[in-house]
Image (tube, rainbow, N blue to C red; front, side, top):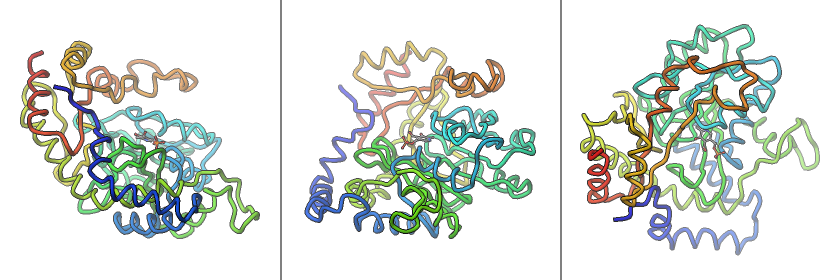
Length: 363
Ligand SMILES: Cc1ncc(COP(=O)(O)O)c(C=O)c1O
């Protein structure tokens, strides 16, 4: 048996007519940049999350950058985040000239440990950037309460969690700013790069809209130093077509995750989702002591796996200048050594899942 990791090809085939029609509409209209589908998508995504504003952009990375720029975060500032995430989170903090300040994670959820944030706050701290890892929202109430006490902005890196819920509110609408990614393999993905910023702050939204197009407020009049970070109209059209199926896909992802947990629980460390929230299962990640061996055996059995992420960010060469080292964030380091992701997509069959689980349990 050969199992597919994200199965984007099957997804395309299932929605082919709608997606092809959407793409051809863009070709027929030839409004490739900021065509009408951009606004349409922004309206639908804002309604989906319950935020007042959605600004779609060229990637999840750019969504983070635009938000940091809108807050004028730069040299001399610090932003608190997790060391157990994709590089873009801390990279964009550094990219705008600020210092990423890491705080260790919770051993159960792998999200930032909210109890450790306060001690990392200094006079220079401007924002907290929690990541809703693997699709599960971080502890946003605790983080928002602390941030409001200390006068900090909160930017949810929701690149993996679009569609997840926390106390009946949608991810991306859990703090002042939410940033997501529509990278193809994300739970809701386009066919290239794409992302979005969500906020209910009117002024910030207007500034982000302007920053997205070189800081312009009218054609060839530039109020800010911005960047070129527009989403392509074709990607917006694809997302509009896929969004219709997304609520059903979220349910299917949840079923797949529950099945994995039922099959594997008690034998390996399975993911834990808080009772007051849901995950969209960007990844189904387990922890094993003998990861190399398990990955190799699964590969031989036709089962692709991945590691999200093998090295916490404080140990990355690019962050050497921060002066951090092994032992500084022990939970993130331990989890990085043991974590591995199994194939996860809405279309996995019970047979496939049983096959994967049997191979994992054999080792
Ligand atoms: C947690 C996290 N932040 C940021 C990003 C960046 O998103 P993108 O790849 O769309 O730039 C990703 C995805 O790759 C991510 O997983």
